[in-house]
Image (cartoon, rainbow, N blue to C red; front, side, top):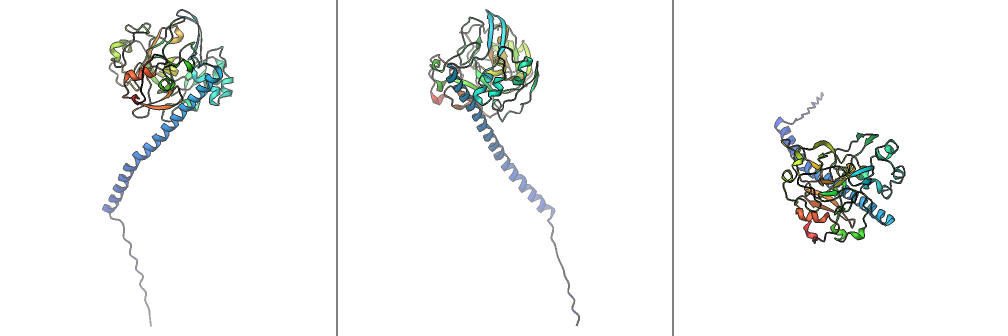
Length: 344
């Protein structure tokens, strides 16, 4: 007897319609998942940014405890409006030993400018705590003695008024040239006083305007809701330094390592017909002798506002919508304003 076995196999492939349906479902799932992933990443970056500011606050507090005063924003020698020596060296540099950067601090020569060759080892260093993880422009730029790295954290150096020259009245904020303050002098309350805030690297700014036409009196400055181009038409006329602000962390001048409370956070100011430029303004850099009036804005890559460090070491997220008067009040150390906690 003969037996025949017939083995038959049948396979069924996806139809084109079924394949397209599967692809469409995957695409929808990705579209739903991607924003959540991006939000989670941004939350992690913001948390690291907060930690950076807390480290800076701890370093600042330890500096004050060890030295009895806060660091100056920069050192200058001269008379009147004539500078005979400029040391530079920002608050960032002065608190390095309290940020576990002792060897870097020990390599600094305070008798010489930060851009001289003997100081290039320090000025060319990239310090991680000075950079927010959300920043995408972290590259160095070439200085006089080598590469210099940017910073995302500026120290509060005034409202509009930063410095008037030797023998002039000091500004109303936590830091200034040749001025060492004590936390005990923050009579507005440490929890109501800005000491640092986020800034963006490679910010364009206008500088070397000399005396501003409408802003030359430390006690008469524009309100925080004024039109920038009306009260400071110099935005359209002075020297433009495109992408040059906050690119040198060792430099103690306001356009590099500071900010002012002239305008609320993330205030956009544009020059002429070019809408792409978000400008800062510095009437005259401190090392040229002043007077220095400046609108150097706090800015952030985090949507909706900026992280700030207060005198008590706490870090808060300040919304762009904060009342300008409240923002100004937070920027002074002893002006007697009453600021409630729910105002920011």
